[in-house]
Image (cartoon, rainbow, N blue to C red; front, side, top):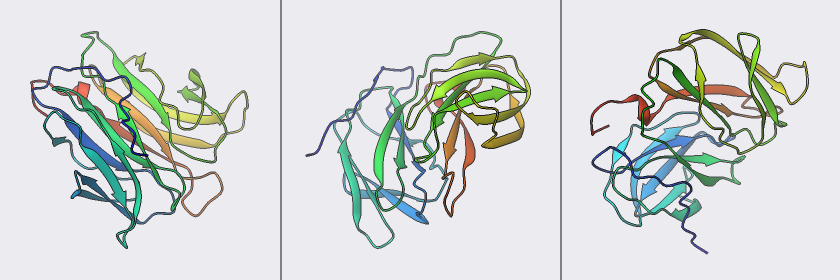
Length: 212
């Protein structure tokens, strides 16, 4: 059944709805995303498309492998100003679409903003550390955490299994700038050909004006 996947939809400050696509399906080399049956983006593994301006409505979103086989299809309710990242997740070919809302309001504080998206299908629940200090705990697959405030600074992030001193992943050399909104996406597998890694995106709320 085609389901409308519309979590936490909030009208934003942008004049139009925007979407972007993210291939987070380990085992895939490249995936194509279609908007209303028209191919809109083809993304190698662990890459994002640009933000794409759309119109309000109820479009269908589909994802295909390199042979043209449809892997998943959903419907999404789009209203003016909303922004979504549409991620292909799950180990290929058991790939499905996850709709990730992007808040667009800015908090106007002298802070940086970070959230975590655990899109790795076989890692345990994880705790996240920044420069050795715990910042988020018990993030399960495929959870998207809330944004937290960070002091603008340079950081090394560390990913541990929940309540463990074992280290799954270290992400050094990251800069958190004032007024910016980031999502740290965990992708890949703890045990697979595409190992656990992190991709950090700059999110829609970081941008000023009414267009992306």
